[in-house]
Length: 533
Image (cartoon, rainbow, N blue to C red; front, top):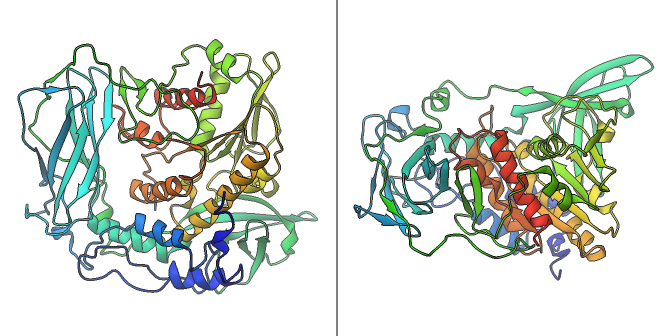
């Protein structure tokens, strides 16, 4: 609590616009050597927003340091980039048998298209142990040695079939391109604004900023954010009615396009290694008996799948296999969900799963942007989902329906049985990280205020999902924001639900919108924290 307000620093609010230019949007280029840290990159003529973290803020420095990434040299030809088919990995100190609970280390060697070992790092891998027959999976961690070699570390969680998977998600050369485009081309994704008055309609382009264009500007004082739309030819700015996704711009140069080939992204590194021989430990069970209460930290790994059921290593999670258990847990509560479509999947799962939970028709333009409300009159509870404020790549929605999460939290009083579930990341991937830091800061401050007036409220923060495969999006961009989110909420009595690992280590291919069995496990984990006893 003592840190509230510290981020305004010595400049005050007005000084942050200049600060975002200087710190987060500073013009530079990717260096020609193998750097140890991220380089800040260029900016449009004026920033779309400014983070509420002052230049004296130690937290800002620490946040940027957390997402430092070694960038590949510039102008590397495709031939010298990391190639999944020639890269390889080996078990370090292999053995004939292993035991549950033991660590396993794997050495990954990155090679280029000609089979030459790389001499710098920065590649992004997903690694896991898995078993199709046991429907099991657990994530590992990767250490970059900055010389073309990496160490993957795992903890063995089950006996029987255990296979190793190492996937090259992005080469270091592609990450350098993604990094630059994130920070220099926020216009690569755009939105539509629908204006209407007296029977006249116009559709124009909107975004955080449209440098050099004649625009209508919309400023939210509470959240200190600006949104602009091209000025309509025949309508006033106050006739702005609806918002929707617009499209994506092709911004890759001819030299960059080959690095984005799907044959180079999310590819398994070949190996002749078979299944590990993992033996059980007698009279020992892996897992934890700790109740799922607020504030628990996520170990690594945070859990694993066995027979398609998630076993949390954070706490003793429950499995709500019938709707009666879920109804008993939710009875008498108010569950407010805020975020994107990955959170909407949770709302949709509950409505489909619980017969007495009925959707209330709010007569919205489209289902996907919501808002969505369901109530159970028999057991006296409600579950609501509302999309976060722009940027939002969804179907057409009234601008009055899109609200800042922080503003919604500030409208809530001290209510018994109140549950807040938040996710916010996927629609911010294409912008400089300062935009995301700014939004999260306001959400965090609103969470602090809510807990001060309603200390019994349960706050759950859903992490990012893996499986981002759309234009201008990637799991590398996602993990950068996920690191920031975890750090910014780390000192509050809230719970981060680690669905990153739940979506990355399942036997089914990763998907931004996971299949039902994964959603069930995610919702079960949420319910475990809502009803820990």
